[in-house]
Each structure stands twice: as structure tokens, then as C-alpha cells.
Image (cartoon, rainbow, N blue to C red; front, side):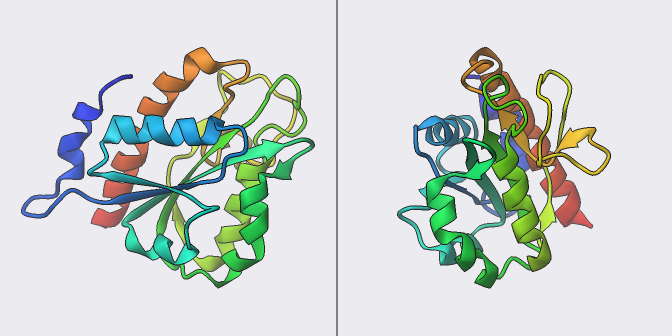
Amino acid sequence: MIEGAKIAPLLKVTGSPLMKIGLFYGSTTCYSEMTAEKMQEFLGPETLDIHNIKETSLTRLKEYDLLILGISTWDYGELQEDWEAIWDELDNVDLKNKVIAFYGQGDQEGYTDWFVDAMGLLHDKLLPLGPRYVGYWPVEGYDFAESKALTPDQSHFIGLPLDDESQFDLSEQRISDWLTQVVEEYLELTAE
């Protein structure tokens, strides 16, 4: 795993402790969970707390400066079961001005018409609650037909798409590059 040392200085604001990032994921086959663990390894456990949404109250979202939400897409563009179970509760979470980044697991080959759709559904579900988003990721390097996780101009995903089925060898570098981007964008956004 590539070390997160290059972004550690970014996380420390002069005279204050490291920022705290909360990562909340749902995982059925452990891919989203393994991604969360890789992200924690990269940023360090003193910076990134990981929470399985199946076992964690949504009230914990308010404890963090920056949120990373991880979701996988199932079958024909469906939500991961743990996210589906709390879907309606998300309407009552206070996310006004909260900074959020997304990552999603999907299968470009087996479900090319629904690649990381659930990530797009989660993004759109939370949008009316007033969060600010960081971590949009370019579509280059992916081979899919359709996705609900694209920006309107279809040049970027609304978060980091991972395909540990067919592009596992690319995931670690994507994760490290994306986390660096997310932290830099967060710091730029909150400095305004």
C-alpha cells in the first residue's frame, strides 16, 4: 500500500490536531469493507474512523469534519442491503454544509449498464439535504455502458468507482490518488 505520508502534513492544521474523517460503508461481500480498511491504512487510524452502517447510528455522521460514504451496487443497479435498510432514515440526517465524498464498488463487465449506480443514487438522495461534495473522479480507464453515478456532462463519476472484480490491480493506486485529491479539495473548500 502506498503510504499516506505525503498528505499527513495537509491534515494537520497549524496549532490544531489532525482533522477527523468518518468513513461509513455497507458491505455484503466485504469489498467495500476491504476498501475502507485500505483507506484507513493509507490515512492512518488517528485520522480515519471506519463504521459499518449496519452497526452504527446515523447520528455519528455529525461527529466528523469530512465524511466518506462507501456503497456497492447489486444486480441491476440496486442498493447494497445495509444502505437500503436505512434509506428512509437518511432524509432526517442533518448534512447542511457537511463535506462528503463517495466511493462505490461495481462490476463493469457483468453489469455494464448499471456500473456503480448505487453510488449515484446515494449522491442524489443526500443532495437535497445541503451537503458539499468533493472527490469527483474522471471516467478514463473504465469500460462500461451506463452509470447513474456520472456528472451531467458525463466526464466524471460523482465519487471513486472501484471494480475489484475486473480491475483489482488498479484499486490501490486509485485509492491513494483519490484520497489525496479528496483531502486537498476539502482543505480548499473549507478555507473559503
